[in-house]
Length: 550
Image (cartoon, rainbow, N blue to C red; front, side, top):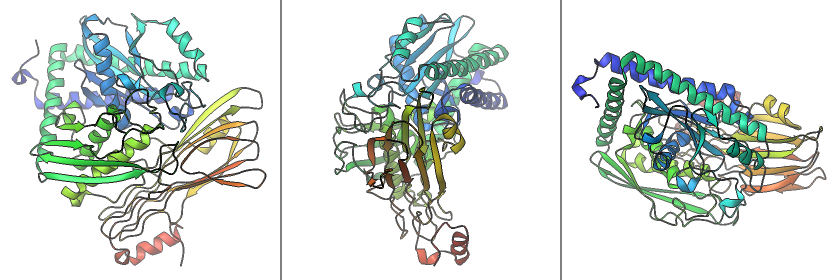
């Protein structure tokens, strides 16, 4: 029986346990990065780890990717629906990636491990990794021209990956046969197992010290405390209805048709309700977003706009509800493609921040560029071995009252790193000729928007399948209170024969030796009247070549 709240240890012990749980999650995350094979994970940090209660609520999470951490919630619940906790035994591990059963997109594969104490399940450790390739119609499994999910890779329902510590070899053989980089793929899965095992071991040590029943009681108390703190922060926001909208450039298929995202955020006492009525219907291309992603965007945005110092766990999410019209961009019907949903999640998050900014203007920044430019290169090396390598390139954040935007930074639910040039060049016959801040790309204002990045690639050998998933090529990040818009993104392919092809935000192309790709990510919006900018700030920008000299 769970101990009554009054039976909990003293507050200092409870706080020590809370910090220990967060430390365990971060140790899991560190293990995940150090053990993974793919550059997109070990250098780009596109993976996340967290702990869950036995009921499937977030207990503690690593400093990782908010999109992953929130979409793990319905994944754990889907696994519990298929495999009730009472049927689990020590040594079991479960796997899943299917978006239509609670996942996010096919490259994000989750592994979930039950943690036992005294023969009973007590909690779960979980790790989600973006795998470099999971099959489908293009290397990297992120085809911007997909029109159904079957073109995006292999779908994995909730399955048992390990049974009492024994790996399901049949499943492994099937998965390896369907991906382009089987050794790297299984290596990353093993890294996820290692991360979950760290969670199992460390939480077991904590239970041995405090007792399983006491620890479970502390879990419930920590979630209730975060819920109380979140509700108090929401009460500080004036009741009302606050709307905002923005656009994605296109869906990767109909390149001249923008996609509208509209939110109406209603604050009622200590609750937040986000209504997506007015958002476009689901699209032909892969920018549809499953409910898991829409919830992730809302959880991130509300946490950021209330009090980000509140310990993040499932209690923070209890006051938040969503209305997701069926058949819309944010709740598509199967078999709609969904691989590019990150762009949509980021724009949803930005819209919710913009809406809440009307209620608490002192907390609201200008629009972030919110462009996580995804590039994927797939080809063969001179020794005929195959490679698939992905890039995640950031853009500028929006300025705010008292602070310029941050240059080349992930915002709105993503938290990856730009891939180091050396890591890319070591893994593929590609040369990077240029990596620098994009001068003048931040929106003007009393405080300047963050800058985007310029990067240029040259293919050295072999034919390459190249995927480009960009945003803000048509709709720039808006400024706030008189601030200017950020620069729009721009990308071109310069063929070896001298011809130039401007990329309209999304494309899948074939490149050959000598072809070059030049990308320029978008800038964030400016804040306030540009005439009010301090002269020394302008001088520093010119000296640092962040703006064009005049």
